[in-house]
Each structure stands twice: as structure tokens, then as C-alpha cells.
Image 1: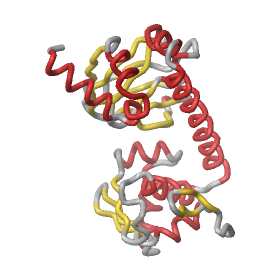
Image 2 (image 1 turned 90 degrees about the horizontal axis):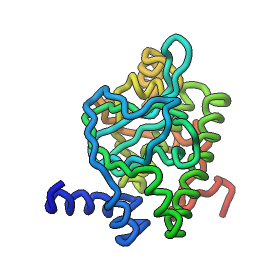
Image 3 (image 1 turned 30 degrees about the vertical axis):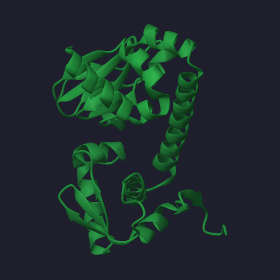
Image 4 (image 1 turned 120 degrees about the vertical axis):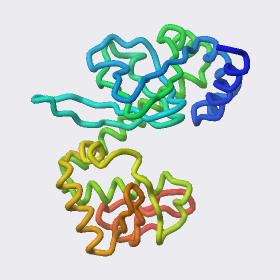
Length: 247
């Protein structure tokens, strides 16, 4: 990696949510361990059951983390997009619990497991970060279990659209909010534990109810409050979640 290229990649690491939280000292040390990897669309980074080798940061592209079932069925657990990290569980597990596959041509920064663990040993900030990631994963997976067991397909889609909106830079807009689906509808259906015809049917239903307007991957959330009510999600006020009865 040339000096210019290396500086650019370090800048990308520092610009990521992880980099902003860790700061220049930790990022520079980790960058000294890093390898740059390229994966064309459709290529597998690692498979469920493989022995873990390290952690990955997405510099370009998008990857899906999936669990496989009988008859080649798959369920998308998570989409790893630009600036997101994945593979943190590999620090503590003997095998990968998921398969990672590139949905688009992707460029990854790879941090070897042993070097990352050594860096954690003398940077409490990095230790705390990994602990918080593990706690967040636990919370997300519990929420996903609730959705899959307690919600119907329309509620799962409404929950996904509201969550997508609240992660966007336009989360303060309560009407006419726009979200862009980050992946193909086929993959989104898999994430929501339904088939593609069911997803298309629910999208049409939402349009007929004047809840959304579909323009390809771009969705206009015409009645965000109605979508939120379907999911019984708490409202946001001043960046803090509150229940409807809270003052």
C-alpha cells in the first residue's frame, strides 16, 4: 500500500463511527495491523462454522451476514454497509456463527484476531467498545426474536421502515420522510422472514392505505405516526425515546 493510499485508508478508518469513538492513537495502532481485502459481488468472506481470523471494517460495498437452514434456506441476520464493522464475535468464539457474503463489489479493512486482542489488552477504551457492541448485538437479537415470534409481516415491515428512518439524517422530519431500501427486495424479504411475493403484497397494502409511496428502492413514508403505531415503538423526543404516556 503506497503512502498516499495508506493515508487515505487511515482517514477512512478515522472517519468511521468506530474511528471517531476510538480516536487517532488506537486507530493508528490498529491500522498498522490491517490488511486491505477485495471481494467481488457474490463472493464469500467466511462461512458459518469457519475458524475466525479477525474483524472487518467495510470501506466500500455491502455484505450480508446470514444463517443457513435446511433445503438451502437462508436468513439475513444483518447487512454490513460502509463504515460498519463485523466479525466482533470472532474474538470470543471458536467458530463463526454466521456466513458473510458480498452483495456488491466490496473493499474491507481486515484486523487479525491476535493483533486486535493484543491492542485491546492495553487500550481500555477498545475493551469497552467491544463490550458495548456485544451488548448491542444481544439487544438487537432479542428484539429480532420478538419481531419474528410476536409480530406479523406487516408489523415487521413497519418496524423496519421506522427504524430505517430513525437512523437516517432526516429522522426529525415527521411527514413526507424518505428512506432508501439498502438492498434488493428479495434480500429484504429474507431479513423480515417472509417471501418476496408477501413483501410485495404488504408494500401494495401500505400504498393502498396511503401509508407509503414506493418509487423503486426509494420509499416515502407518508404517515410515519401510523407506521410507528403499528409497531408500538416509543416516540422520539429530543433524541431520547419516550413512551406515549411520559411527560
